[in-house]
Length: 205
Image (cartoon, rainbow, N blue to C red; front, side, top):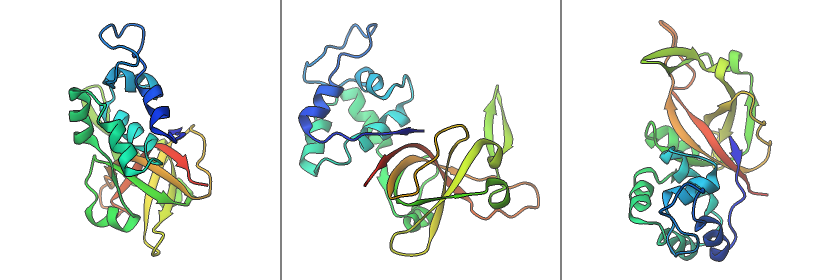
């Protein structure tokens, strides 16, 4: 999980993103007016993680107005534009996530996170790929768990990030991640059926 400092102007965004990529990206050029996936990956500190790249990009541009955001998006090359359309995050309230959230999609939620005791509150399982098999692992062994409540109601969703990451601040923030399904143990009923695995957040104060 990583905190994002959003761009404040189009020029700032383009200067950062149109960077030529890493030294071995011989087919990309700095300040050529086009943003390639390799250039976005350099800024994000990622490699071949397309879904996370688009989440990073969208949150990085989230403080720009609509026209400014579209100006930056128009500079994406053809390949990156296709990836952007495929993984573009949907910003939702917690209540909307509970009703229409799609598993494995990028979602952005705003609110104040409240940390919970993982083992007491959330004992469900998720399937983790290990080799060629998927092994059920208790969420409490992998994640630090929080609630984020709807700002217009008391409805909440569960959010989580990998243990060992810095704790989220208890103030109004915007978080982005991938919606995941909870797999209950045999004959066990879980409190919630899905949670948002957080990749990024930004401070709104």
